[in-house]
Image (cartoon, rainbow, N blue to C red; front, side, top):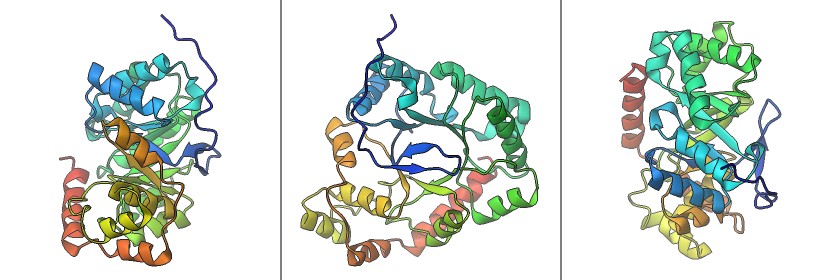
Length: 293
């Protein structure tokens, strides 16, 4: 049975950015990576909606688009109150433009949506991502997607896209791993200068030492959790922050980061937590994924 749409007043004060296509995007996104495509997964998403999240980040690879659509419909909140993004995986890129189209249309069907707010190229697969981008532009012109975005793109890949002369629509975002433990100011600054917002995936990842050291000491000072310090740091870097948890209390905590601010000294202390080994590990992973592994 169809749920009755009701007024949604929970996000009236939620912070947002305005993307280069004029779209308002909530700065806090609930990520669905490893959320199971089951009733349990749907309950997690429903809890996130009840906790106030309206920006959801999924992907064809995650296999949970259907339960996201179900949870949104069952919430009774109008579709246009949500910002939903998905991603095209590497296999579709390798198969060509028709497979890219099929991937997006399958995502729409599973979600039960007429349009997607944003579609990312999940990884810049060599010799494929320019054609993928062209097909996303075609889908954009048909109104099936309202924004095009990049994921895990480096400066070189984006410059290749620019040099191709095929890009007629500016990407709105580039989603990359960013946290105090994986801070790469060069790539962030570059895309900001291109008027492309950086979205921080794995904003709470690599935080094995979060309960000790700088993060812990700063969290004690502000009487918040270490995770809240990580989220607040990313927000003060003017990033979209993708967070994920299955625990309702943590869903709420990750959103409760607007009542305090980090000082310049605290921000700088957190920036020093990235190690050369972490940067090297990430670079190796990116090479592997870009080659389709």
